[in-house]
Length: 119
Image 1 (cartoon, rainbow, N blue to C red):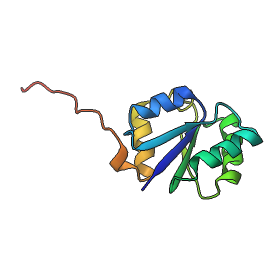
Image 2 (image 1 turned 90 degrees about the vertical axis):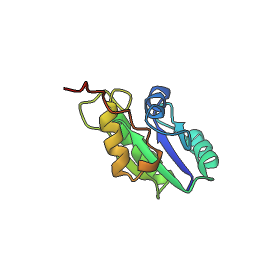
Image 3 (image 1 turned 120 degrees about the vertical axis):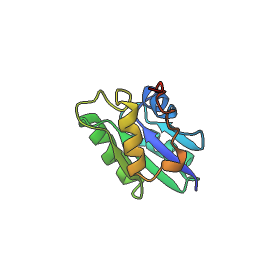
Image 4 (image 1 turned 45 degrees about the horizontal axis):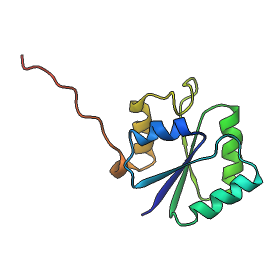
């Protein structure tokens, strides 16, 4: 299965790259995409069987989700929690939780368990 996730910016992509394997393609909109940007995304992402849209939980992120929802009607949304400073400001634990809810466990790079000294 080939997977792509669309995010708003390069810092969002950088944050997700920490917790996702390179098998998942991450594409940026670089803000609210216009008609030409949407067409470019459609051409670039038409080879992926599954597309997710992971945007911030703010007015801009919601606007982008609507635009991308029209362009990619089968895309699955992933949300970050309201109050976090966007995808880039979301704690990795919560990102992993959202990615697991989306069914992407096999692509997640889990952090090593914290070392505990024997007692």
